[in-house]
Image 1 (cartoon, helix red, strand yellow):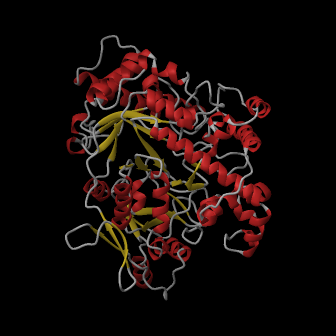
Image 2 (cartoon, rainbow, N blue to C red):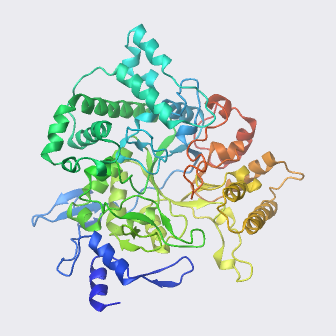
Image 3 (tube, rainbow, N blue to C red):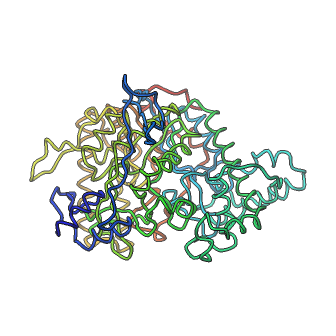
Length: 602
């Protein structure tokens, strides 16, 4: 590579090579590096980006928090380490999948309250509940929100709002008639939002309240989508930037709808707060790695985002063409110039109604795979962030909120990322399918499964995740069957053989731990897998209702959109019946015995 280009890239944190999943060096093409620098606004005259002074608390530092020095420089003092997380067992919850007599075709905030308070768990991890763009079709993936700073009104329990309780009988009856079918085979997000929006419009008191600027901008975006469509990039040019005078004129013209959407956020805050206060379980909310490029944050924060870039992952054995997650990244230079306030605001918005936060793809605090516009995922490169600063700010915000932090560090993640997490008291993630003893591996046989008692102590442990086969799905090779039927596999027979080998390896592991019953049924194996998880050294032991019930369908099948019902599969029974299910009880008994925090379930 040209020396000048290499030096420019190095000065701005753009990788000119990287180490792939096989630990081989891969050179990045010059034109890719130039394209990424262009998206950062960098040329040969651009000075190196500013660096914020972020330090750990010590005898000679100011108190924990954010400070402005006499020379005008920002100083951020962060905790040396978060306090240890109390050992506990708990649930990984897909909120939309819950069912109850009062929910309208989708799980809601009241279901979260009831499940958390009745389940007896010490921890409940919830899928992201950040805001949608209020337009059809509704974005179903919780990992591509319109905004990470506001909540999703799709999850409101309409009949538990004060406005419904105080409404006259005719209005209450009109609202009740709008309820969609209670137990759909698949969740119909568009039908649910249409019904809830009409109900909320009937209940809205029409009041105007003062609102902070960020809420004002978000509510304005929502109102503008109702007039101009869900993608701000297709709006009239003078409405594409929040500070344009045309936006202020539109805001005044649409004042009623702006107030309405701000009111929805206040309702969300009340119900999320109620869910947290009603249970002794610690509620942990999930933070996605990015936002919908057509959504509210991409509009309001476009000066801090590389709006035309998308984030993903380089090619590996599982995705030979790489992955494009279709979310724009932070610009590291702009974050630093603003003292990381936009990042801080996102973390605070989640922790406002949570006892903890899970950071999806926590390696993104250190580096992200940038894909320039018009290029495939394979033609990207890593852009580096000040990971010490971002992890320190995350720890500071968690300290101020009294919250725990869990980082999702699965897949190809540099060891130094996990080491830095543990150094700060941030829990890593351990998944039964993935934990292997690489020190004991051989070139011929590969690395064996690592006994759970040797897993990291500072971790949240589980059998699976929302992107992986459930316990029963794993035992049946369900994900292989579905991908083969969809034509996504080049060698279905080979995939089935690998899945069967993984199953036999797992059965052998159960047997080695004395946990494999004779003539075991499928339900017996589900319970045995949970008993194996219960032997883990990790502080948190979590399972999902899908895993504990023996549901064969996984919530999300990566690599699909409409070919598979991602994020649309409800649980097979209502909350009370679910928590009384004998298979579920047998599965979680071992977790409860190993981590007795919590209370007795119903």
